[in-house]
Amino acid sequence: MFKKGGEMDVKVWMYLVYLAVSIGLTVWVARALSRNGLVFLEEVFADRRLADAVNSLLVVGFYLLNLGYVTVAMKHADPVTTTSQALEELSMKVGWVLLVLGLLHFFNVFALGRYRRSRLRQLAPHPPIAPVGHLPVQPGTRPVGPAMAGPGMPGLATGGPAQAGPTPPPPAR
Image (tube, rainbow, N blue to C red; front, side):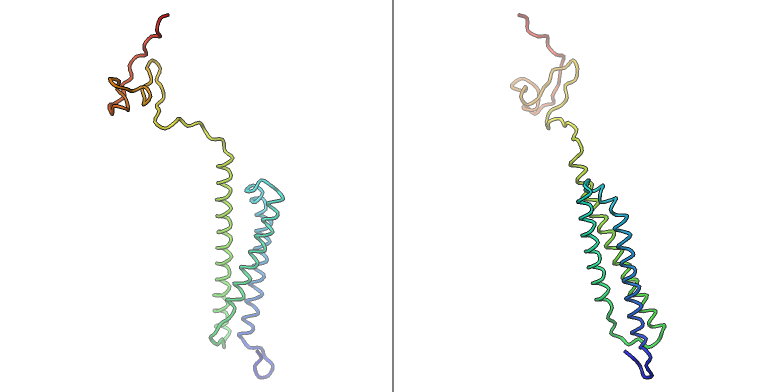
């Protein structure tokens, strides 16, 4: 940790700066996402209490994942003897932290967006859909379909094209 004369090793300084920058970025991004994401979560869940709870859980998960990555990625096996080596390694480590932060953010937004679309689809009124195999009746024609088709009647049962003619008058009484 210390060199002769009481000076701290360059690698130790690199680790300290890396931790300070990474933890600072993690806290800043978590607060920003928590504050600004709450509006989005309220829209997604349509329930303030649930949105607050999910927001808190996401922040905790965000801290755990990112700070876990920061600590795992801190180790550097090669010796760091110069300031330029330390800055190069520091930039790589902080760059990876930023990439992980960005990926976690986009994954959360993607997952919550999918959940929101699914919920909106479930809540949307469904338009009436005509039953499969039935055609709408044209004015002035009689309907022809599987139930009406029979021997001598063109339609689906005989395999021929359904030819609709004029509607016959109702039977006289």
